[in-house]
Length: 185
Image (cartoon, rainbow, N blue to C red; front, top):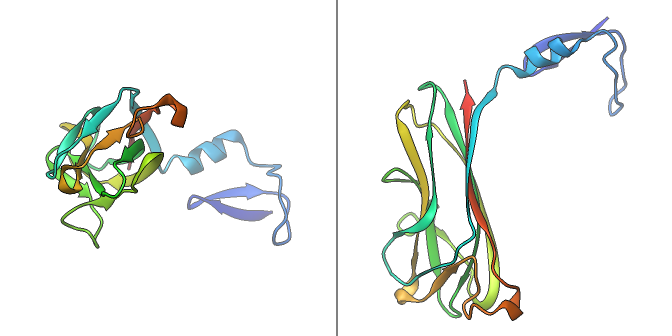
């Protein structure tokens, strides 16, 4: 009987397969697979969806309203996976930046743009999508808040979930979300 490793746990199976072929676990049970996957579990999943619109026009970082999610981890060894889906538009000819925050600490900031966070696109009537995936190690069982802050170049207009002209002809409004998952150790 061949032994196959799944997530660092051995699973017995009675058949073998050549490289690139699928195999069927004829002697493995559902509990074998459950035990193999138990090394990393999702403890909880929480999400905030923002369908409203907001405009930023400041050259210093400010919170995006109603775009935060709190979580309380069950153990200090837990990690938090943060997933952000943000729809936005920025006034043509200008730039905008964002940063992911854990409470008051910036945790997702580009090394190349350390003082300004991640950069965005520009264009009056195009709504862009930005995706962030970040695995945080907060080492805390206290409530933690994750949110996004943004700022614009020369106090230009940057919009959440809408185009610059806010004209439905150019595609209507969007929706954005922030999802946090506790990953148990």
